[in-house]
Picture 1: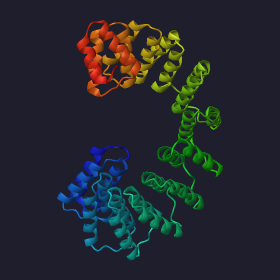
Picture 2: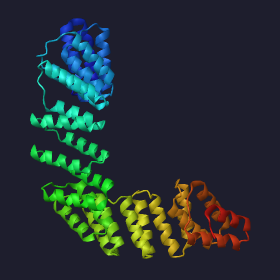
Picture 3: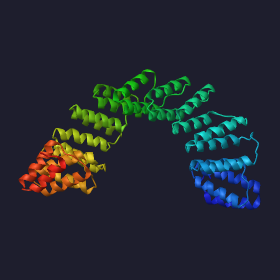
Amino acid sequence: MKSRKFKIVNSFLELFIVVDQEISVLAFDSAMKGYNKLHMYSSTVVLYERMKSAGLVLDPGCYCSIMEAHSKMGNSDKVVSFFEEFESKRVESTIPQYVQIYKNLCESLGKSGRAFEALEYFRDMTKKGIQEDHSFYSTVICGFASIREVKMAEELLEEAEGKKMLRDPALFLKLVLMYIEEGCMEKTLDVVATMTRVKIRVSDCIFCAIVNGFSRKRGLRSAVQVYEDLTSQGCEPGQVTYASVLNLYCRLGLYSNAEMVFSEMEQKGFDKCVVAYSSMIAMYGKTGRPKDAMKLVAIMKERGCQPNVWVYNALLDIHGKVLNLRQVEKIWKEMKRRKIFPDRVSYTSIISAYSKAREFDKCLIYYQEFTLNGGRLDRAMAGIMVGVFSKMNRVDELISLLQNMKREGTKLDGRLQKSALNSLRDAGLQIQAKWLQESFGAT
């Protein structure tokens, strides 16, 4: 099995069925475990069917393997069925496989939203004198957290802490996500306090989830405050949290804080985060520092971190705003050379740049490329092209664009409404001008 020589495995299994049933069961058990380790769960199920057709009686190890396979495949009813079959054999509860069988059962029920059933089986297990461990508490608490049964999750958490059975960091992430969805943001900080008490490090994933949760539920400033509070308490951010809070500082206009966080990221070795680079480059654009943006892109490339479409979009926007069309064209060609496919923001930025420079023919070329690539209009792109078509007196394209905008519910601002209306009137298209007034409320 380790060598993935499955044909030889099958040959041995066929041989053992004929030679000796006891050896055959052990061999099937070993093969089923091997398939599970390789995540080939459907193959484990096939082996079980072969055992059944050969009249072989499953031992506890085989029950563990087939239950694990169905659990991983999401077949909780099958897991319960195999458990009941195993229980009917009245096997001694002292056998070591019993614990794993219960683990597979509780995990399957917990993941399928049947947390109350999982808890019942867990309690039943302890009544039988089977030794519980921390993984059972983790499985059952996560199950209740997934279905947002807050009270049950909290009661079990308290019970587990009292028995010193809180060891799984994944459990705390589940609780944090549950509280965020419920809008109980202060409770996420209680989770951090619990982790501190039981001496489990607050992972980057949990830290980031809390910061982003506060951002979503309470706003940017609350998220920043929580970040600063948690770091002052000794929580260490990782790359994901740093990137998130860097973005928050940029959105709040706290640019010096953003630069400080970025510098801290670099010092800690998180110098290959494309999201962080993208935020910094966009920030340099907002603050009128195109040279710093280009310098950072050069550093990024030196460190082996390749720019993505977000980075290129930020550069296009920066140079487009100052009408540095030479640099815009250079960036566009570099994108194509590196096979970074432009998105709607890319096309909007480059068309906007050429529109501001009144190079409308170029706008048409890029707009045609955008539509050929399946691009869909949004308000920004539609607004730019209404202006372009109006100024070029390309009335047919203007009418077609306005009709598309009407169908998709895209609106125009007052300036572009007036520009489009004047173009239609100048072309003598009074009926179309009237339609525009009625459709978009132009005056």
